[in-house]
Length: 277
Length: 356
Picture 1: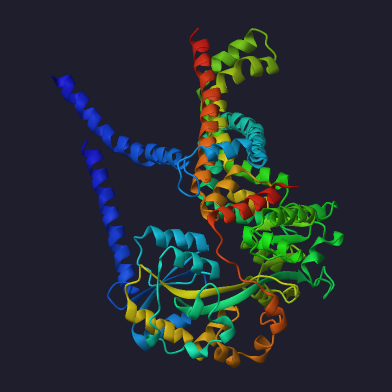
Picture 2: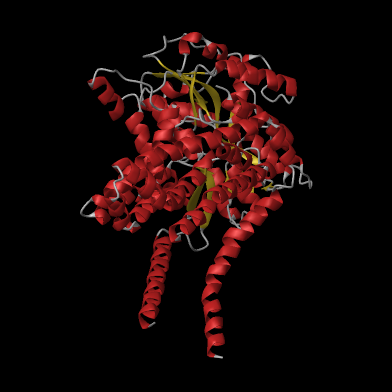
C-alpha cells in the first residue's frame, strides 16, 4: 500500500517533465514530420523526399554538412583531449574548468562578431601576420576561419565530458600498467584512452550533432562560401516559404543525428561490459 | 523538503517581482491605454524624434516593433495574435498580402496629404490607385565601390563585376531575388522572368562570377564596406547611403541598363484596431516637413515630392540616390511570383551559392 502511494507520488513528480517533453520535444518533431509530407501548395505528397534524394544540390549539401561537422569535431577533439588531460593534473581543475566554460556565457552572435573583428583586413590576426613578416592574408570567409570559429565555440562541450571521464579514472589502473612495464604510450593507448572513451563519445555527440546544422556562422564567418543544410532550411522557411521542403531537410537531419547517436552510443555499453569483466 | 519548498517560494517571488517590474516599465513608457498606435516596421526605419513629435501633436503613443524581412512580417501577421495597426511591406509583398486578404483598404476621405506625393511613385502595378498603400520610401539596387581599390567611373554596368581584376573583391547581398535579378538585368532580361531556361542561364552566368565573389552576406556588408574590407558590393541604395555617410571613399552606382526599383509603403494590416491614430499618423508622415526630416535621418529616397524640395541641395541633386528619369525608366519593380516560381529562383540561387 505504502509502496503504491510512493509510486504514484513519484509519477506525480514526473508529470512536469513529461509535459515538457511532450509539448516541446515530441510534438514539434511530429509536426515537422507531418509538415514534410506537404508540398508548397498544401498537397499531401512524398515529392519533398523525392526531390531531396534526387537533387544533386541537396545531396552535395548533405555531404558538405557532414564533412564540415566531421572536421569541426576532429579539430575540437584534438584540442580538447589534451586540455582535459592536463586539466586533471592541475592543482585547481575546477577553476580552469570555469575559465573554459566562461565563453559559453557569452552570446554566440557576439562571439561571431568578435571574430569578424579579429580576422578582418585590419584585425589583430592580420596585424600579427604583418608584424612577423608574412603580410596580411584573407582570413575571413575561408574554410579555415569557419572551422576555427566553430571549433572555438564547441570546445567547452567537448572538454567537459572528457574531463569528467578522465577524473573518474581510477589512478591505480595507470599505476598498475606502469608497474607491469608498459611504456607511456602503451599506458595511454591501452589503458587511459579506452577507459575515457565514453567521455570522448559523449563529447562527439555534443559537438557533431549541432555542427551539422550550423547556419549563422556559415554566413557571418564563412561568407556563405560554406553551405550547409542549415542554410537551406533557413531559406525554405524564411524566403521560399516552402515549409514542407524545409521540414524534409529537418527530418533528414534528425535521422542523421539518430544514426550518430546509435553509432556512438552502442559502443558505450560494450566498454562498460569490458570494464566489469 | 522544507528547504525545497522555500526555494520554490523564493523563485516564485522573484518571478513575480520581475513581472511587476516589467509591467511598471511598460506603463511608464506609456504603451498601455487607448491612445496608442502599433507600428510594425523595419529596424531603424523612422526618425525617433518624429515619434515624440507625433505624440506631442496628437497624443498618440507609437509602439514600434521591428522585423527584418518581408516574409517574416507576412508570417507574423498571417498567423494573427498580433495587433499591428500599420506596417511597411515592400512592393511585391503588398501584392502578396493583398492576395492573401491581409490588408484593409484606405479611407481616402481621411487622408489629407496624398497630393504631396510624386505621381511617378503612385498608382503602380502592385497597388493600382493606391487603394491600400501610402508610399514611404523608395530606392534601387546598385553597386557600391571603394575608390581606394577601384578607379572612379570604371564600374558603370553589371557586366563590369565579371571582370578578372575584381577577383575575390565583390560582396553580394544574400537575397535570391536581388542576386538573380542583377544577373538577369545584365543579360537584358526581365527581373521578373519565370522562364526556367532564362533562370538557368542567369545561374550559369552567376557561376562564372563566383571567382570574384568574396562573400555572400547580409547586413554585415555595411560594416565591411565602411572598414574597407571589400572593394565592391551589390546592395540596396538605403544601405549604400548609410555606408557613404561613414566612409567618403565609397560611391554608389545604379547601372543604367536596368536594376530593381523598390518601394516600401505604409499599409493597414487586417489586425489594425486604432483607426483614428492610423490616419493621424499617415497624415503626419505625409506632411512635407516631417517626411523631409525622416528622409534626411534615414537616408533613403522620399517619394514625397514636396518633402524632396525641402531637402538640402546636396541630397536632392545626388544622382546616386535620386537617379535621373532616364535611369528610372529602365528600373523594374519586382512582381509577386507564385510560390513555385519563388522556389525556382531560390533553387537556382542556392545552386550558385554551392558553386565554387
